[in-house]
Image (cartoon, rainbow over all chains, first blue to last red; front, side, top):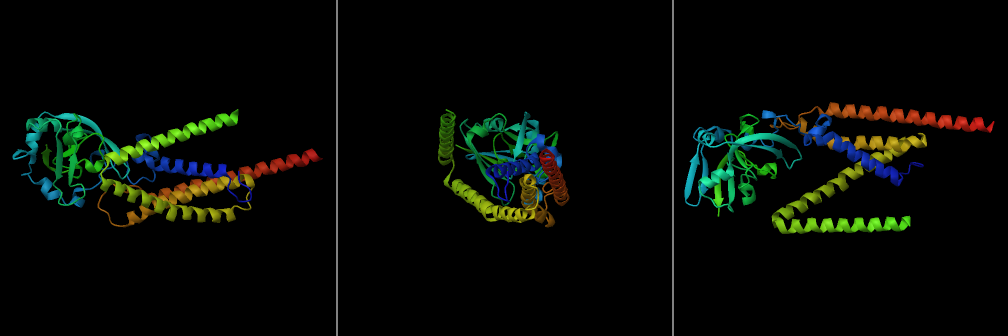
Length: 203
Length: 154
């Protein structure tokens, strides 16, 4: 394939292919369970973290701990002039639903988890929000690019979109968004708002 | 006949590729806000700069050094050895930022969870072993072939 140190086309293509295959094999395990045992160089490991789930931004990094652990926390659902408030106990007393959904981070890792909480669409129905309404979600975190996010009606009214209170059979860890977070299908991890503070109906 | 067939397959592939790209571009431009498009352009631009400015030159330099180092190897082993060391260089470039980040204080215990230096060392060990095996194997094959040539001449 190689003559006098010159690289042939076949050698070159084979080299590129082999390098790409090696890199995928040794890092993609942070997203794909099958390759997990080969994950030597991925910065994350599937299952490594509180409640078997990695964390993108910790409560400490977001400077949110004291607000999130405050017992007077209430989730506010705002629809125009009316505001409904829910304590965590109140949310836990509502009908609970389950969803198997991944945290799919734009940093390149992905891990599935079992979430349990209140369907966002049930909460929106209880305040009589129309089915085509989008919502604006605000986190307790004082600063951050994704402190406020907007979610279109196709996500807000999807039956799998939850205001999650539990993950993998336990109450949400502080680093996973205690007291409540959003988990929706098909959205990047940064938009799965943690330490949820306000849900605002956008008509 | 075969040439014509090959040409037809190529044309079909090209049309499919252009159609897919156009579909992607259409949805990208019609669904994403301008700020997101700008962010995407910056991200893709940075990827090109990083690849062409850092990654490609480093691999090229490593390849040149290897070309000199492997000049005396049996011809059949040269390409394999260069590919093996190319893979090692590429992995080292990928792992280096992880090692730098790991040496700095960071407050998220779920990131950079592995002993990457040890693992990189182990991968280089595997690469070196594979290179030695390839060299010995091809040297033996070359020797056998020349022996056979000599015996048929007698």
